[in-house]
Length: 119
Image (cartoon, rainbow, N blue to C red; front, side, top):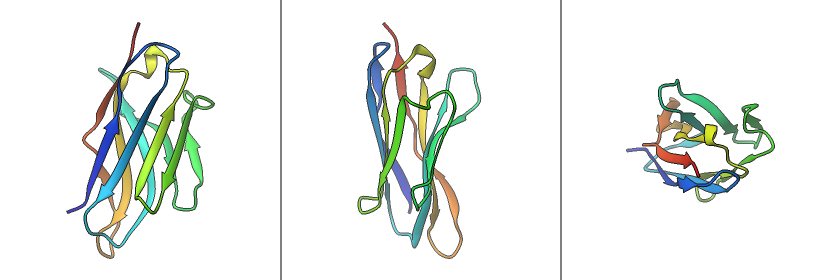
């Protein structure tokens, strides 16, 4: 069974940094895009950053210049380095990946990890 396991997150003061990671496990044929979404309290889930299998990257405007997404294909892991954090970055962050367990690609989600930016 394919799973995405996240780590990182926590409480940080404004201006601080946090790092998230997400590793895919289980049996699958291929994995293409991987990324991060977030859901602030009372709001809809939104894209934060996404990286394709050939390392094309897309960031939301709100995090450009502050967040960096990367992936290690050998470790089947995607990372999100978050710098200059703001209170409005507080949210549950979800890992997302397009994975083909067989010949069909499905979208998978991690369990979510809380990021709180507060003094």
